[in-house]
Amino acid sequence: MYGENTALMREALGTLMQLGRASRGVDDLPADAIQLIGSFRHSITVWCQQAVRASNPSTEGGGTTPRTRGPAEELRVRLTETRASYSAPLPTVEQLATPHPHHVVDLWRQAAKGAALGEHDFPAGLTYAEVTEEQAMTVLKDAAEITRALTGLDRRSTAAVRGWEPIAEADLLGRAAVVCAAHAGYGEPDYSVDRRGWRPPVRLADGPTLPGLGGVLQAENNLLVRLRYQPDGHSLRLILDSQRIVSHHAAALAPAVRGGRELAVRWAERASTYALLIDQSRNLRGLIGHGVAAAQGALAASRARTLSPSTPVEPRALRHLDALFIHIDRRIAHTIKAGADDRSYLIRVGIPRVDLTPGGGAVKQQRSRHIPLDVPQRAQLLVTVDQRLRAPARPAPVSPTCATERATFANSIPHPRQEGVSQRVPPGL
Image (cartoon, rainbow, N blue to C red):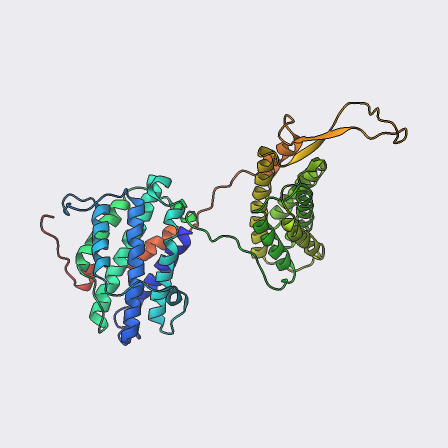
C-alpha cells in the first residue's frame, strides 16, 4: 500500500540523515558501494517523479520557464533533469532484495525498495482522476519532502564521501521541492490515501500444516484463493457448512484473548448466518463449477474441530482470521449473486399438481422443477446474502501516527542555510 511504501522510504532516509557528516561508515565507502547507492538514489528519484505526475494533471513542460510554471510543474521538470543527469542505472531486482553488509548502503537499499514497490501504487488507484484533491496534495507533499531529503543527503555526501556523484543543479531541485512542499501543505491533508494503492494478491499457503490456529488460517487463506472459481451447487453448500463450523469453534477461542469478546459475538452471529444459508440453499442445484474450494473448506472445518477453548492463540492471529472471514463472506456473496445473474444456480420448487402416473405406491412424491435462482421474487437465499452476509464496507482506518511520522521526517531534513550552503536562485525569480 501507499502508506507502507512511503513509510519505508521515510524511515530509511531519516536514519541516513541522522548519521550525519562525521558518522562512522559514511566516508569509507568503496567505489562499488558508491555506484550501488547511485542506483538506489536513481530509483527513489523515479518514484518522486511518478508521484508528482500522478498527483498533478500531466502537462508538457516544453517551452515553459520557471516564471510560468507552477510549483508542481517546476518540481517535475527539475526531477526530470536530475534523472537524466544520473550515470548510475536503475537497480536490479536482486540488488533491491539482497541485504547489503554495509549499513549505510543497506539503508539506501531499503529506501529504494520502498520506491520500487511504490511504483505499483499509482496505476492501482492513485492517479489524479481517482483521488480527491486533498489526497493528491498529500501525495505531492510526500514527494516534495522525499526530494528535499535527497538533496540534503546529496550535500552531505558530496562533502564527506570521496567519489560521490553530486546531483546536477541540486540547489534548484531543492528549492523547487521546498516551494512545492509549502504549496501542497496549505490545505488539510487527507491521510486516508495511505490505505490506497497496490496490494499483493492472495496466494496459496503451501507447506506443512501449521499447529493450532495457524492450520485453520492456512486452509481459510487457500479457500479464499480457490473461491476465485465458481463452485458447483453441492460444493457451495459444503463451503457454507465449513464456514459455520469454523466460525463456531473460533468464537469459543476468542474470549480468552484480550479484546476478543467482540470478535466472539461477531463470529457467533456469522455461524448463525451460515446455518441459515445452509437451510435456505438445501434445494440449490448447479452443475457449472468444481469442488476445489470445498476441499479447502473441509480442511479448515476439520482443523477447527481439533481446537479446544484452551488452545493458546495470539491477538494478531485472531485479527488475521477476522480479516479472512470478511473477504470470504464478500467472495461467497459475490459468487451467489453472480450465479443468480447468469442463471448457473438453480433452485428446486414444488409444483401443486397431482401425480397421476401409475405405480409407485399410494404415497407419491411432490412434483417439482428447477428454476433459476433469480426468478422467485425476493428469494430468501438472496435476501439473506444481501442483508447478513454482504456486510457494508467499513472505512479503512488511518494510522494515528501517520501525521506525526511525516512531521518528524520533515523536521529532520536540514535547510541548506543550516549547513552553510547558499541556494542559487534562477534568473527572473
